Length: 266
Ligand code: SAH
Image (tube, rainbow, N blue to C red; front, side, top):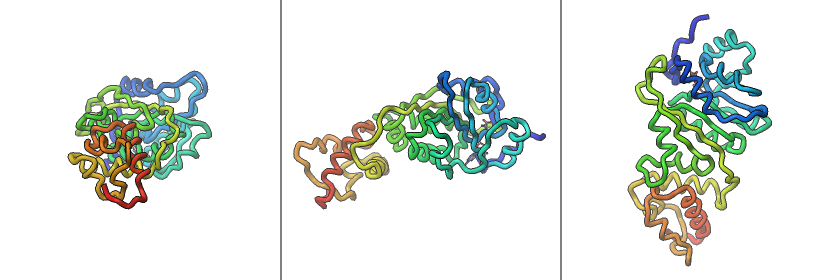
């Protein structure tokens, strides 16, 4: 069977370096008990082959491209393939136990993939993925850094993020125009937030919308209480979004929420 011809609109850059494929799969931390793993976008299965060699792995893959699905059916007949769009999957229906996600992500939808994962964070205990280096750096950036942003806060709220290694364009066919990198996310033990989660996301997004402004200005249009006695609110509002850690954002949202309903502006 002919190899799949790479399609740009599906973000297809096929990895042809076997050692790199093995290194990515080895970045997945698996124990000795049966491990459930979902691979996003297997393409022609370069990662898949190494994944199938892991001890006691229960592997499923999700692939949107029909040509890749046909290729995999011919070459890896034992593989359990879900044909479709990852972004439309109900991630709580894939396995009955918490599982890991791995993939050389289609770069054009990597942010959307992370928002889906966040929605199902209690099912997804680990993520090992390759993505555009800049996006990887942003996700892993600590507060105080110029590249720290919305996804950094939201992902770091629920996952420990590790930047593992960079990957040059030459290991792909066709080579992408950008450098790539592999990161690992490991679910932390935060079960829930002390504040409303939608409001938390709103505060984070709005805070970074105008990231040069202080939060007092960036959050102006949220109708909130002006002064909460001893709340410590001012210490957050005088700073900019990029200076707040995920814990700070949680505390800020909790304080703001308490003041809601008073119908005063900041
Ligand atoms: N893992 C392969 C292919 C990586 S390219 C390798 O490393 O060589 C990204 C893959 O994601 C492609 O196979 C592409 O068809 C697939 N893909 C793109 N959008 C997708 C989506 N929404 N859902 C599932 N798979 C998708």
